[in-house]
Length: 428
Length: 153
Image 1 (cartoon, each protein chain N blue to C red):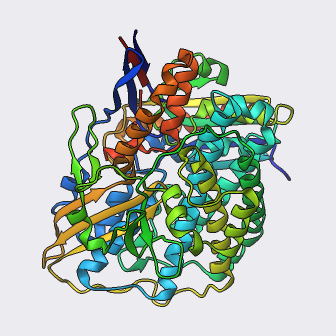
Image 2: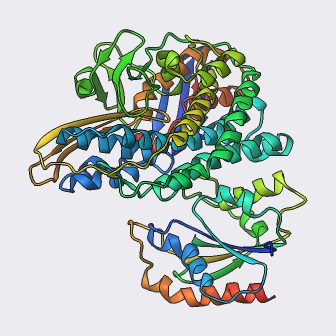
Image 3: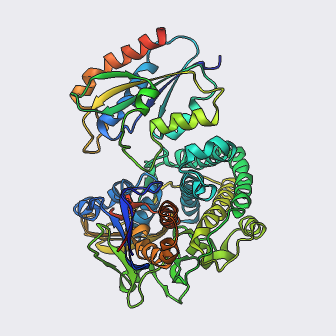
């Protein structure tokens, strides 16, 4: 029998897209994660602009992870200039990134993903019976947003980040004022991880190639080598020799693959799998209490990986503030150098690669940006192929829900990937 | 004195006319207002959950994309808005209607009993600019006056 599951407008994801799964005689014939948001052509927009503008222009690619764009852009431009920020600036950047991870992960965990596990169509319906959970989530999210505002100047599209550092370093007093709420949020994050560990997770695993940054000592944010669970271990500047983007007819976003191997998974689940021992003791202990261990190949448990990372980010934020001294100077000067620079940082959804070729006049001649959602598209489709047999046996409404949830496991940011989603399950 | 009324400007000031709600809030800050009135400016309507709690009345000011000329003023109730087929401008954020619904669900007994939305019609923003268009700049005094009248009633 022919059957099609169609979601014309996938909800609780960021951006606009659709999903079609076509069955033929009970077997899946085709899966299409269709991203139809128009290409936004940011790489072209950057050409001819001053290198100093890259963080602010690229931040506009996304309202939920602007810091990731700013950090990858800064690191790439600084790499081109041969400059590395000192430890004080590095810590302040990590603190800002902690704010973004907390805000972004809490938005997805509490408002977008938890309703899937608790059986509600959306967070508003869930709030009627789980008001305390939603209130907790909003308060934790606000703690992250506040960090972003105090360091970055505002919560969305921070304005205080510049190539080389910051326009102005926050005072120790301004950051210490955040500590009581961050300490509350860290406890709340541990409770959240334990609560979420009690969810019923679909019995589903795939043998993913996980890809993430790996730093010699720290859980990855801004630096490290790009490593994978299949043995990949490369410098950031070798990214394009290893990864390639491919055009597919049904999507305006490019699909990323590892040359000669295919799709891979990046994001919280990959980071946890590849960097578990780099987590701070508080986060590792919370994961152990929740029964979250690696390797974890169940993408539905990505909500647990996110929760572990929220504990991690809050604990690191508290530690950074405890020992904070404003960096002097607040930003390093960069020499004018004609060169190509490479940057890769861990956005909430996974690795975000930037490359810029800068001319001697300081203008950008060429730009390349590869966001995490476009890197995960192939893996999302592969998950849907793998789970399609189960979908084929389910009532249409339940199948559609599970298919959407499978996509939401990735917290896809479609606006970023084009620089969105609708589901169709078709059978014949 | 704790606030009994909150006036909340909503918008993105660097997206041109989408920042009109913020601009109205800024203008109101320069005026002498009745006791118990607080002014707030927000980008993310999720903040409404907190701001609508524990007060008697709220006036929200936001840009509205409509099929009439830019600069027209609308005074709406959340119920009227919820009946409209609205297209959210961003899936990254909670919409104003969702923010109000979430606030009412989470704190049914203490959310502002009266909520009014002052909408200023705009053309969809097409570029990043911190400036309002001439039509919206011209409508600003009337929007401020409308909020003042609502505060006096």
